[in-house]
Length: 73
Image (cartoon, rainbow, N blue to C red; front, side):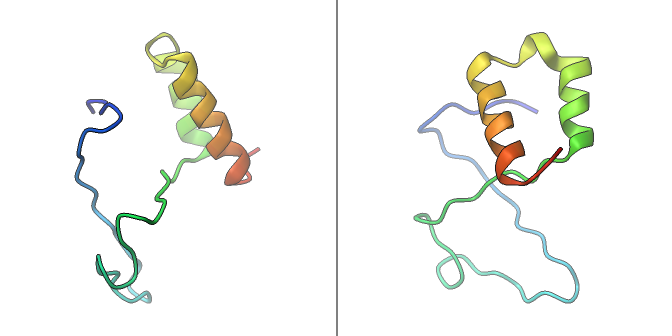
């Protein structure tokens, strides 16, 4: 996966469970809403083990912020 820089456009795919309604841009959310990555303890461990030297300090700070916000041990 290639990293994007601040200010550069990206594409995002929003998936939902079968019991959830479809979310439509402009109705349930728009460009003013904050979207965050869904991460897990397993993903963080893989980042540490396989990509530690590739991840910058500011990206690690973001991972730790998400970890705290998502209540990941």
